[in-house]
Length: 270
Image (cartoon, rainbow, N blue to C red; front, side, top):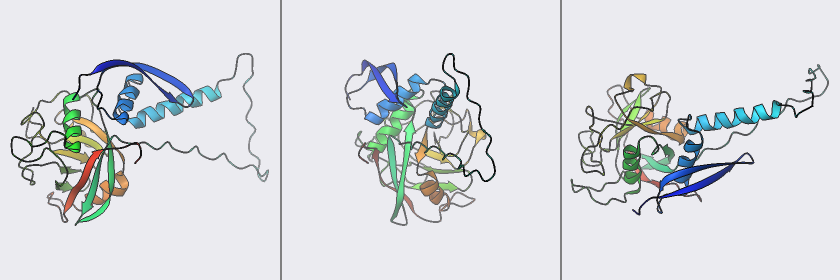
């Protein structure tokens, strides 16, 4: 991977240009990843893309309501019964795209894709580990197994709680390996398990992160400050993650074979 460079970058949203200075931009970074870093630099108080989207809508609404200088705010005419006036159509919701994806198969049948965003701005070690394990670019690990999520299983699924996978060495939850050799440290616990679709690392105690991860099926505040959150699902939760969840059991043992049949970086043409 090439050395990072500093750059002043801009992005246009809702007809306005926003700019920020990014450090450590690497030549082989995906465009989507650069966009994510830029957005979170511009909006540092936002922890995910949903919050960015909400903030943008709030700002736009405030601008539309604010009258121009010297202009009186227009009084709203109350709707009268039978006047034929139709309510305004709701604005179309902006479709969020991830930077990394899993293609999921259940009992050897592909059911769809999950797309994620990760947070290298807050947890660079955790985010880079997941990114490289999605692309497989690091080759073979010390265990002699590929450092690659492709072909690995979701080995522990508890409905209403979480779906766990990423044991790339043993496949049963007893193994795993990071791109850093074995385990790596807990960088921080800034991001919380506040929603469904949170992407977090499984561990066996402090500073024991490897390749095993889990996706929450509901808010799980009991895991805060114990597991490092490093991203979130932005597409495919209801269509795919919920189907994975249906393959679980109270003990966590899957009732069907759930496999990551493909994974990698999302291409802009996808």
